[in-house]
Length: 256
Image (cartoon, rainbow, N blue to C red; front, side, top):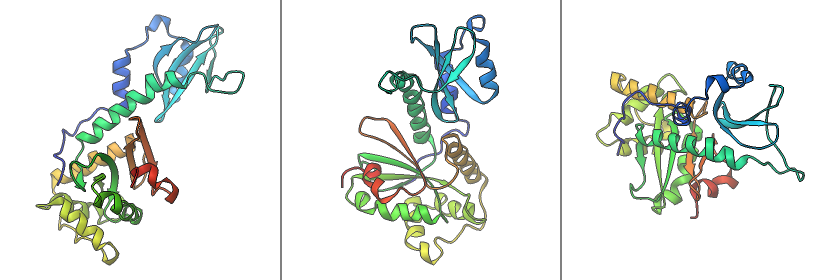
């Protein structure tokens, strides 16, 4: 089963955040924020901390950060701690940045083109950016079998073509198959013997899907495969770069 392809243009999570938060009034905006934005940091929203500080929730790369502007207009980027060394503003960053970013990222993944691996009504959904030639993607697929076969987990493979020259053609063989799920499983079962036979060419529409999937992968902070995204029991987004260590598998897949 393949998830129908969504429109090729999508909003990055941070863009949605900024639109929702609204722009800070230009006349009331500390000048130092502009300097920080020139360095790549994004400012989302101001929040109150009391005292002489003004606090702003922001994002550096895909990580939430707090920015504290002092009375003299200088800025401190980092964590504010209490007398016991505990962070004071993590809950604010979670509410203003992490949670909205996670919700937007999950929505983007749902709308992307993905291939189902497992039962469509399996309660735990895991997205994985996968390359048909990636040995660590294959190891992740193998590790998932007990959870997938028991009906507890469904993997949604967001195919990309980045590992080898014929990766896009192999992805095209999977995405263009009459039964993409069967084609995906064929590639995994034959992985050590070379995998699925690559398509003779990559149709324009599938090339567009692969480009969109790769752009989404990069926007979520992944630079290679597998890039794994799941929600924990509290609904918070969890991301794993590469094949998780054995001790992390229960965290990724949930109870067996």
